[in-house]
Length: 268
Length: 313
Image 1 (spheres, each protein chain N blue to C red):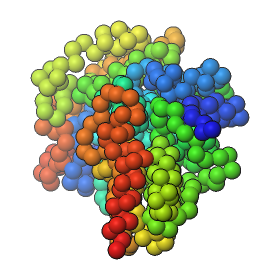
Image 2: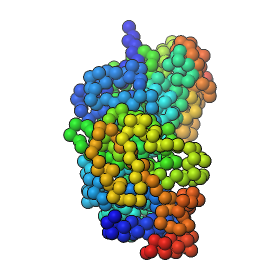
Image 3: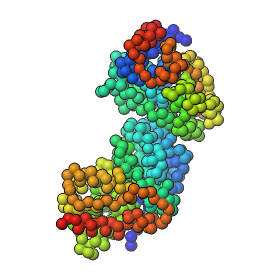
Image 4: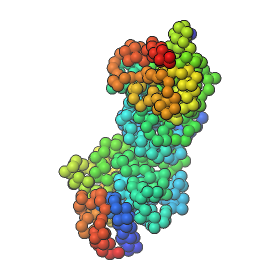
């Protein structure tokens, strides 16, 4: 992986930690696990976007369907130049445009208001349909969670995307295998989710979700007339000793001492 | 001779005409094109039509995505599914984002008839009215429906349009004015006012005819827009008529009657009654029999008017 991107990933995780520490609430575990997926899109040359013109009608759309990972999206957008990095620590505060969950009406670069799980996936199907209308040619990239995949609307959307041959739609699964109440298989087993998408007639890929090159490569594979599912195997809380693979770090903020350990672990 | 036509048919025919004129109008349905009457649009403009199958939640959120790419989207299904089953998609993807999506909510009320209580939406107005950014329309007949659909298409934001299955009497004319948020007085009178919406408007007019023969002159206010509500028309009715009855084919909790009561409670205290479904579900049966059983017909409305007039003192 490009040394600059490795450094940027460290910077983005540090920014996420700053956001959540300042907000005193938020979702660190799932924010840390999806950093490289977002980076592949915004910094890996995948998505056709322009930070100077976030409302450009023909841009590719990027939808964070697992909206509780908003701190990760905001950190990536700020580092991409959509808004000042210094605003990140206003997260979740009264009057800030950085709402607890992404709000497309408030945040430059946010393409869908998400947080109610499953709906971003369905919203993306609408975007992808629009991207194939006469005179339009844009792609749609959507990041889902594995707990989120328990929502019925995910499968309604998956059915529609295949039915309408939406090969301009790529859905990532941030497969960290944990949700608030514990491991997926204990809360509600999603079983072989790659086989499920394949059965819905999607093209499927499995990659290391912390390997930006691998994610980019899967995104750039030639299109075959089907929507694309990229299962990204990830580690919840990636990069921080006490957070990795701990469901308890789904939705709580660090105290002062923990915050110092986060920074030390990240080497910043 | 009175002419009868379902408001859902006017909805479908008008959508087709909108599509003739504008390639940016998109219609979505969830396997009910024959019932919601989007079949006219689908046949004429197949490239502007998406069938989502029996998956209303997905249809609503996908409609929001389409709308945010510059299209005017009409998402159509039964009111019980569009307002009920997909409520949270309507809330978070359409209203929260102010998406340019119109909900065509058909088969509202008991006049669905034989399909029974599972399919008779009695709470859709209450649900849609509770959502910020949502405009709520309940036109009274096929003629007014056409104007309502054109008006909805001109609004840049969410609109819900309530349509009914039953062929009901046309009581307005192409010349009757229609403006969103502005009630229409269809009949003048100063002894009492009936504020009605949807297919209760023709019933209210029949009640007024009966009452006129008894010497009670009733104003008929067609409140086709439930939100934003025409508060001025309500205050005028209270002041000039001194007694008010509301009539809707909907539960008495949270619909037109509640909305009018909220306005009256703030300012004008006059004898007041609500005609609506009194906290029970519908059932199978011919629409006429259901209207009588649930106290929604012209006779029930006339009785309510006699009571409020008697209370005026």
